[in-house]
Image 1 (cartoon, helix red, strand yellow):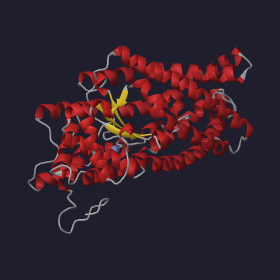
Image 2: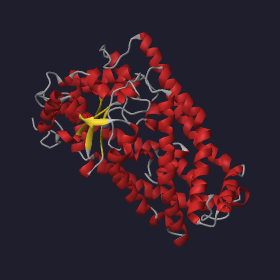
Image 3: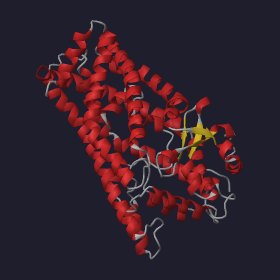
Length: 444
Ligand SMILES: [Zn+2]
């Protein structure tokens, strides 16, 4: 949770909503059940399903530690900076500047949003710079600083424009309905989320990465994937399969499903194709197809929508309480003052952190379902689905320098995917095709 994503989340409403498709690997530290898994397998005298050689293990542990610290520190700092800005009177000052600029509300609103974004971006900068530096040092990112800064600038601009529009709408609703704005704003907010998720693959994602039809790069792979699709008894036409040129920025593997309706698509990173075998790509694709077939995107939208309504109501109560208590000291007198935006972001920031275990737990459930689906989907297409799936996780873990043995609390709180070790262990033992076994999604 960063302020920028929070402001953005007034448009897109949940920071992660654009990624609701559920990628194969989280862009966050992975892990969790790993410890239990490894202990268990060690006790049984078996080999763990995901292991690293000693030198790589040391690097994976060090890099995971950095990411965990950055994750919690980033969240804590995001909340602390809002408190600081309020307590030091910076928010009131920015509000005064906005009011002094013009009596036009649009000019005031966008001026205030711009100042807030600028200040918080600068305050976040040290952690952001260090995060990119660490990714480069540990070989996860190959993106140069200029390109990195370009992406940051694009993100800033998008947040400014769309965040600004949502802020204008929010304050209009607050003035019209001071006691029920949390509900009346929730409706256009959800519409904005729906539009955002729909247009993101077409309008937003291409601003940050290059995409091309998979059929153009690798027609043989499309043929093979169409076999997996046919087994699922569904249709994903080849023109809904895209290749993303991730190798220009990162070294890790991934694939994901995004959009819905006419914009729904499967995206495979080019790194996956160059580093994984066709069998492994089939499994990765099968996993993504699971999200597609099991309708995880619409389900997540409904889930997040309900959560958001609860958070908006709590946000409304929290803002009133904070302003009653500290409004005078912060020089933010009412909820319709531009400065109240920061109070609302503060409350939503705390709520979003507290609800992380709920949203991540929900996501991990979908990820596990997609793992099961993927493994069942490649039965009969690859020789040994258990081994292929387990090897895919081994490769994913190695490429992302995933700690095989992470902290269970960190997984519970921050992991959108089950740990790589637990996914690999599950894959290695899951065989519903044995006599008496019961495949979950496919007929035997
Ligand atoms: Zn997934």
